[in-house]
Image (cartoon, rainbow, N blue to C red; front, top):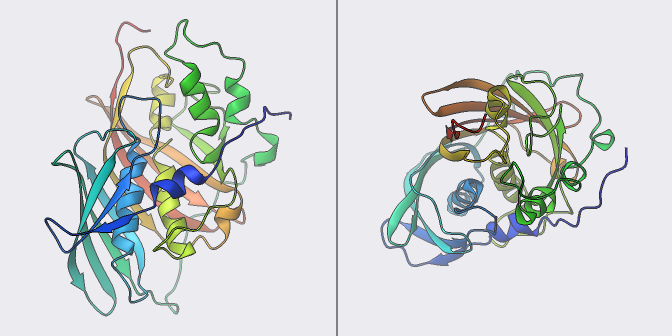
Length: 312
């Protein structure tokens, strides 16, 4: 299948992960980072999750790896502006460590999370869910750019040239939807599940202060937030560009089960389910699998979903 050319770059995510250590004002260690460009009124929520993950990882130096994060989004962030992440060293044990990270911007708390780190047990028994077998090969699927290239801005949607460019190549990752995206309309069936293949547009760059494995975990935390609410939007028949639709991340949990290895050199499968929708909120669940079926991470996220009742 022919796809439109995309001139995206993975520098978006690695730029987001570039932290500067500063003197703490509230807790034990502090860093600053900059939110990345996007065509919305507020910064992308994945900036906060990934930057907090990077901040926490930089304070654990005994070989433990990040195994979970539990986050709340308190206020929207300004785009292209500096945020401060203060890390509290809550506990360091032989097998596990715990960190609290609190984000600040304009003097107010904007984000808070707890992060857990584990030494791991290589002799422990294992179980993991199977990856679905019926997902088409990513190279056979159209890119986001292919879907969006012929779409005119304006009209009956909130589509702009800026949002087309962002969805096509501005998010660091090439994304291939099954059964189809929900940008302008809900492509495919109105069902509570979907899958995506995701891959960095080019190899991830080194990030100062992070080992490559840590960078890759933070990159997973970054990319997961883009689409985790899409199965909820799909089943409710709400495309992103629908006039009057307002969404916002409320809380987020992520578990890192296995190191991705070199998986981020290529495609990862991201399967997603809508768990619930109601009262203006929706809950989505996602799982990341390597192409050979290894279960890498699980995500749960609740978001505000506020449609314009007069749009349908």
